Length: 227
Ligand code: C5P
Image (cartoon, rainbow, N blue to C red; front, side):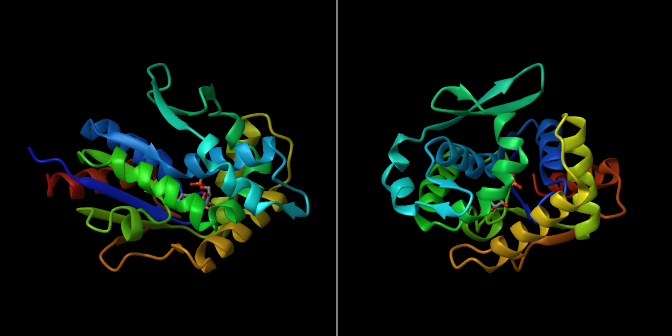
């Protein structure tokens, strides 16, 4: 059986990672959440006070990128790999609305992208990988055998993210989440370096009205025809 690269791109909170994780499990592939890597850099920038309300010391962050070491470690209890920054498990810490607020400006920096894309390409060099993000099918693995582009209405996505954050005990309003989702989409789609666009050869899936099971069945079917 040959191994392939599966690239899943799309807007914020389209449920990419939920599907990508389950798809990887079914195929016995590695799953990499590249959004977690941009979030890890943002978490570092917030900790070092390079970014915050009304300021962004881009140069300071760029000069200190070598101090950032991002790793993933499989957690058998959760069934997926958690993200670590310089040895510290930051899986929960990067899922806050604060990190979500600053991640898109951080992800516009070409120096940050170059560093993370290099690491992502290394992780996928032996194939057998499902990677989700914004530029996987266009920049990281333009030769990926299967490319998916996920969409859903902004309201559907904000509702999903709102419920997920509430479930984790965060105090916030639906409007704040909707605002974050639409702002991130705008920054991600209009940035100069590697904007979020559908790769020409990607299969588009609008999952506003699709269950996780239906999406997964479709993706497993598509992947198996290529393996
Ligand atoms: O996927 P997630 O919503 O966690 O990604 C957080 C942010 O990281 C995105 O809004 C985007 O700004 C950035 N990102 C990116 N390229 C990727 C993955 C994420 O620019 N491949």
